[in-house]
Image (tube, rainbow, N blue to C red; front, side, top):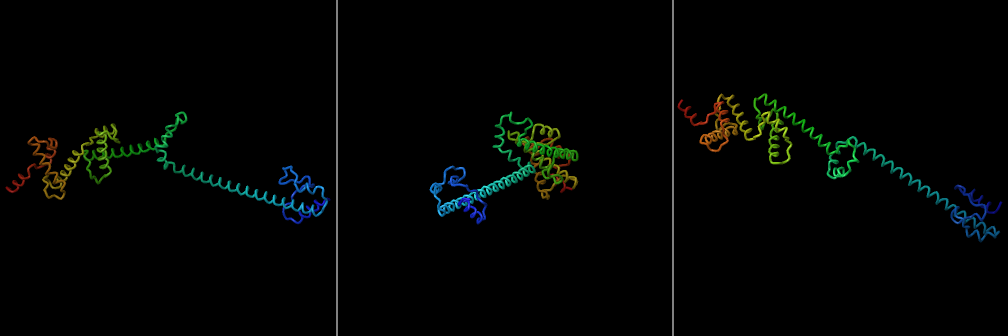
Length: 306
């Protein structure tokens, strides 16, 4: 057994670390790694020396270098393992986040319709060649519009049926502005008139030609002034049924009705002399039918004579 073998055996027994595989001869020693074939410079100087002390110092230095390289290698492995663990943890978190996002998008698909209806997204979709889109593809904005149209159409049909029921029950189509029995119907009536005015001015309107024709055939009153007149006339009918006459006093609790009565007499005088007025033969006939008095002064004189 050579001196270097004895030295290495002694050092390995004293060290708690993993035994290192050192070369069995000086010629096999390398400077930094086993792949490098360069002979250690100290090995050249002592290759012909038989001095035990010099040999021991040489192998001591060599052993320390190998220990340092071993520790450095272990540290590198630990760092690589730590980086690998961190990378695996990062990927795992990303996968979890992606799964959560996918579940969120799937369960709340309808909530993202507004995102797809933006001009940027729709312009991007429109810029795609038609060949790249499946034949069954429907743009999200189109789906939202179709769903909204379906809801609006259903609501419109419901109000129209309520309007027909009102006509059947009351024998007329003059739904009051304030209709406690069905406030939604009165609001719908006002909206239809408003949409028709917008349509006549060339503005966007939800009133299609088909709906306008349906309402007209059902007796819908498009003229809001005419509708207001008939609304006041209905109030007068209620007064006549309640008190037995149509002579509403000027200090009546419903001031809107008493003021309307005064205006009818004024319009009647203009109509009698041929001036421009809202009074027409149809209205005169309706008022006469319930006993309307055109000259309240004559009524007061008759009462005083009696």
